[in-house]
Length: 196
Image (cartoon, rainbow, N blue to C red; front, side, top):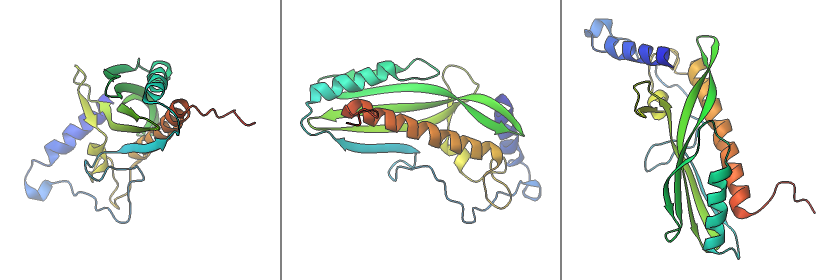
């Protein structure tokens, strides 16, 4: 990851030299990010409202809090907000994901923020703020959206993702979908093996 950051800094530095030596940015020709994006914030975001007829806010809140407590993650899930009266839980977690970096697979921490809000008979979840550790310490991160904009490091000359970016996109899709499925099952009270 530190090598990636060094190359990003190098790419930024190259952009500061005279115009004739600037790195030509790739043009996105037909490639569209497969990651869900919030139209209001521009951030990668998995979100939905799930109906749970007959469930009270208190029961949904209890299930959501238990999901936060039991959710598997590389790092301990820390709750930033635990508001039972308002029906809102917000936590941050990280997961080690594999990235293909110059042909080598490396594990890097991928952070995200998870919000679950409950009301009688329904809940809303959002998984967003995906980011990589910037290597600067003190929790400094680089948002995934920085990698999704055209640049010479993560896109080829034809405007398609380099292997390092494609492996990141794949990891976010896999991880995001798994967490969405787990949240929906746990908070709605539906079990995957309940097939009477």
